[in-house]
Amino acid sequence: MLHRPGLARFALPRFALARFALAPVTLALILMGLAPLSAHGPTPQKADETIMISAPPEAVWKILADFGGIAGWHPLVKKATATGNEAGAERVLTLEKGEVKEGLDEADAGAMRLAYRLSQENIEALPVSFYTATIEVKPAAGGSEVAWSARFYRGDTSNFPPDELNDEAAVAAMTDFVKQGLEGLKAKAGGQ
Amino acid sequence: MKATAAALLTALIGAGPSPAAARELVAVVSQQAGQLSIVDPAVPAVVASVALAAVPAGIAVSADGRTAFITHPDLGALSRVDLATTSVSLHLKVGAEPFGIAIAPDGVSVLVTDWSADALIHLDGATGREIARVAVGRSPAGLVVDARTSRAYVADRESDTVSVIDLARMERISVIPVGRAPFVLALSPDGRRLYVANVRSNDLSVIDIETVREIARPRIGLMPYGVAVTADGRQVIVTNQQSGKLAWLDAVSLRVRAETRIGEYPEGVLTLSDGRVVATNWADDELCITIPEPGAPCRWRVPLPAGPRMMESFTAGNNIP
Image (cartoon, rainbow over all chains, first blue to last red):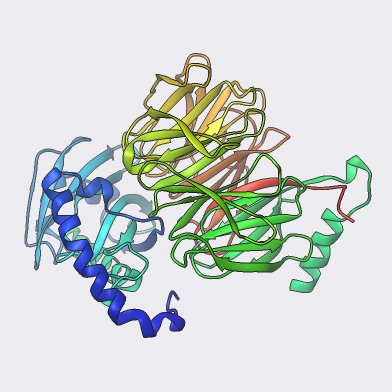
């Protein structure tokens, strides 16, 4: 969708320049503890998936509400540690290529809705610079429907991102993360 | 189909000199789809659409209701749309990452924030030529213009400040510290209060214009991304993107009176002249319209092309031939 053939001939030199210029800035920001505040531009992308699970909503919510328990059901999360299950809690996810940190914004037990955000990015592990996401469990015929929705920005928010950090790469990675997560949740909850 | 829609829109905005013929319409930018939709909230439905270049973001409509200007941050470009013919009449390079946009006090020229150049740029509306620019804080996002005082207020997202710009001199005359990551702002109808939605601190900075100071910072909800004030100035309405809610704040007590779940990732919000509230639900690809009652749910939902975010209402005027 965002492929712009007219720019192709500039891609290599600009890419090289952008990477060269970005690295020290990014490093400085990380050292200042500012990276999560400063690292995204203005064009958000979306990953939005739902799954049917033949388990009661309360049972599915119980799994989700354990904020640090994600490694127990998400195939892409090797390890997770959380500071709690309340708003303000943080968790560190160990993925195949590194760690990302997430913050819990809201765990609404009444609505069975979890809202969280990326608080420390790692574009090696996940090629996005920022995201917010929600997971909501709703009653459905035969069990539950779980909707997982993420809103995020590509890994390199400059106007000339390399292929591995562009919008398509971000959408592919987040969609895969969400889909595999829902499948894992379904398996954990005992759905068919 | 498209011709019919265009003819309908022409009929709506070109209809006679009678004041009763003036129609209030809403122009909504769908970022993923690259589309501009013109919604007639009286129906409510999309009455015309215009294909735009990739990733359109901000929108402003000229005072006469004839022309829309749209920013394309990823392209470093600006599109101008003739609303009577629903066609793109100009598309040109502007700045590095133009994002927020507003019409200048003269009603025709254009002000654009440049997200990566940290500047506010004044452009000729007819040619797109740069007239002047002024440095603001880091990653300027939304802006509002008060034509009465010829000032612009710019949300400097990564500096956590609001820049006050004297537009006659294109000079930054004040810098007001606010909450974390201010994104958009709204002025009260009397021009005395400025409300600033702080995306990362989940609150709203309330600024007294006379003293140019933040006087309160009430907590609003998760990721406030849009803000509007009712015509009587008594209610401030905020979209809380991450909780999917519309929050109604009492302008006197500065307390949230009511909040309602309206959809997934709501962003832009505005009030219509009849008091109804319009919000874009970004992830649901729709416009939500509520009655003017704090806490009211969506009464109408208008489907839109993918990724609706920013919008502007305008009066399709009786001065259009």
